[in-house]
Amino acid sequence: MQSTGAARSTGATGSESAATGALIGLALGDALGFPTEFNDVPAILAKCGPWRRMALPDPAIVTDDTQMTLALGRGLQTALAGGEPAPERLVGPVREEYVAWWRSPDNNRAPGGTCLRACELLSAPDRPWADASQIGSKGCGANMRVAPIALVPGLTPQQRSGAAQLQSALTHGHPTALAASDLTARAVRALMDGARPAELPGLLRAYAHGRRTVYREDWLGDLWRRGQDPSPTAFIARGWDECLGVLDRLEAALAAPDAEADPCLATGAGWIAEEALATGLLCFLLFPDEPLTALRRAACTSGDSDSIACLTGAFAGAHLGAGAWPEEWAARIEYRDELLALGAAWDA
Image (cartoon, rainbow, N blue to C red; front, side, top):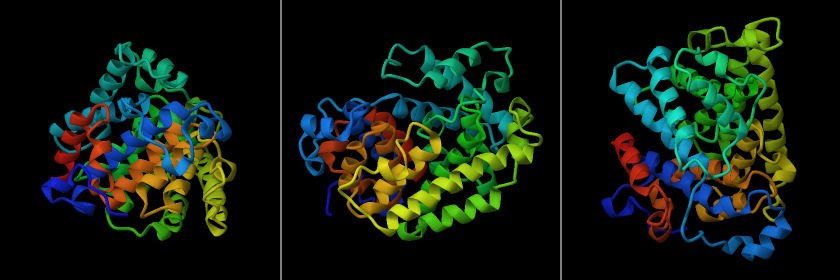
């Protein structure tokens, strides 16, 4: 598909504009899925018409998914301005940005209960962050916002893994939330680095197996003790095993693809982190070179449509760059200037 995107006017395409592409893509998916969340597919079709022709709402308003992505991005910029990335340097700025989001009057887009509860607890400055973490929650709020960890340059794979899990743990401490956030960031980064979409499920499976018994104590401290597991290894393995299970469902869906079926029927409704990852990936992998079709398929789903489409947009933009998105869409997205500024800084 040939399209004119936000970065096309500067000559940037593909991997040269992958960060911008991912950020604009996730916001567009978020805005496209906002009106369809909580609707089943027949209701969406009645409201929006044929899914392959779904129009971007006007105005193109986003949800807490994009707001929290930007909060994480700002926190990362502040943390990395201080030097080498480390957990003690990351926690303060990201915590402050999450709390600022919680207090913002613009936080009125049906935010998740886990994020609200955790951020309220994080607002007490003397409370250790791990005491605020909702250890029982693996909601998709953990990984809907994780893309900046993949997009920011200069991190080692180990630092990306630790940072992805830590940003989740500030609100969602369930081991599956940690693993799914790590895996989501890995997927975005692999696409930025030139991985072919068809090889992505295998890459993610190998990544999950390789980290299945690795508890990142250097980034998470003793968070695991707040769960019910006998050891840190047992704690984190539980999360990776659930992610490996949903990758099985993803690969089965791709073995017999049906673009007209509701993707949630194959890989889950996306309210929880591992299903949001898998269903977002399924929508992207059904249409790896048709980014708008992928977004529309993700938005026309019976589950957490905005979060699914948000992740689909991040994958498509990381793969194709900012040129994936038509200017008439990208120009209207809420928070456009901040999204483009972050993308430009990280693409540079």
